[in-house]
Length: 250
Length: 314
Ligand SMILES: Cc1cc2nc3c(=O)[nH]c(=O)nc-3n(C[C@H](O)[C@H](O)[C@H](O)COP(=O)(O)OP(=O)(O)OC[C@H]3O[C@@H](n4cnc5c(N)ncnc54)[C@H](O)[C@@H]3O)c2cc1C
Ligand SMILES: Nc1ncnc2c1ncn2[C@@H]1O[C@H](COP(=O)(O)O)[C@@H](O)[C@H]1O
Image (cartoon, each protein chain N blue to C red):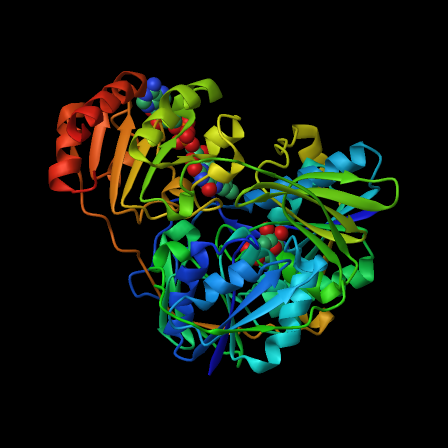
């Protein structure tokens, strides 16, 4: 089975995000960029499947600027086999990403697509579900466990608001990863060297005939209202007094 | 204009997430119909019919809808979509699971996690873990929207909408339900609690969570939350996680114990009315958002806090 893993290049999760003063967006100049953390979990899951003999080939896809090659290289260094970069400098919304991925799925015919549950820049949490819908496939979202069954189906355990839910899905399927699915490995130095020789196929949006014109027009981007500075209390008695008499929350 | 609001419920009862999302749906300006999709879900539909401002309740009862699986639920909503200008759901794990599926098949870009309705086509939503607030205008004719319920007051009761039973589509046959392992608790739910006591890595173990955090929560009638580090370490179940990729809460009082205050955690609780931080590191970033900060060892001060609460309450 082939596994397709879409990986997004996003601002590193440790970076303090700054909004541009003119309200036009977030400042990405000279900011550290990394693979979306949920996508690292996806790559790790795919590699574990291959190590367990359940997958043969792992193909990474990124849609983004030329520098997204680095994101793909990161995944290749972890152990994926090859990459596809659909190069564009335009912002691409989840619906358009899902349409491009659909075209790639039709060409590559994977048995499993693993996406992150959420990109930590746009916080949309929708691309995987959209891809599954467009393909007419089953979806296992927010997954913390994936288990293939002998009858060619898969059990997926999902992190839901009330706890955990296990569902059984037909293959091929779309999986989206949650934090507890696995702990991604670090790439070793020899693997980083090897990754430099692995192929990355360069594509354009036009190759897939998808219209990526935005459907959401960004009117403005502003800082959230700041909280007023609080105070330090010296004792538990003072804390309780303030909660009761100043804040009125007890 | 008419809006379809997809209810969050467990068949027997309606979640207050529905009442909160209803406020956002009503802000769009048109009539609101609530869809209750489930099995033997009439009690939930009756609760929905009582919410004020609801024009009609659609009740779909069927075996395939019992567990809210994405594929049949999306098929049901798609079948209704023609009659609506907007389809709205609370941004719960159920809403997030189903609605993008509907949006894609309608060729609509979903607006996720809105925190404010500026105009019927314009919304505010947080991005980058709430470090920026974006205002977006949705250009698609039909709107598909999930609502961050912590940002909206629950709609009140007083309505008496008619309940209409609707047909259930055939099961697409892609998915089946195996089982749920739900956390059972007498405590209030995180997303509706007035007070939340949250524990982080500093709590140290699941035994300590039980010994220190939950007794304080019980004393306050509070829900219990946790940081990702505490959940990853197995101190607390996954559904207690508060943050960018967990639950977003905005209680009257949030008490963070042994939590450093990473942006991903702050994203889930910084809109709380009053924030208390208990941390032994005076430089912990949590103190930057705390109204009241106590630099101390949580194992020393939480028992003291319980005793002090007994005094002021008793
Ligand atoms: C993609 C992604 C998504 C994430 N999503 C979330 C999310 O939704 N929610 C979330 O919370 N995190 C999330 N995180 C993780 C986040 O970055 C932090 O790692 C996490 O919040 C840290 O948890 P913590 O504060 O409990 O642990 P730490 O950062 O280790 O802090 C522990 C704190 O406890 C204090 N302490 C220790 N012992 C005591 C004591 N005896 N008394 C008092 N204080 C004590 C320490 O001083 C320290 O400040 C996410 C990260 C990523 C990459
Ligand atoms: N531009 C992109 N390139 C590759 N994968 C993407 C892209 N955008 C989104 N994805 C995938 O979709 C997931 C969810 O993203 P989102 O729906 O934007 O929160 C991510 O974790 C990625 O796996």
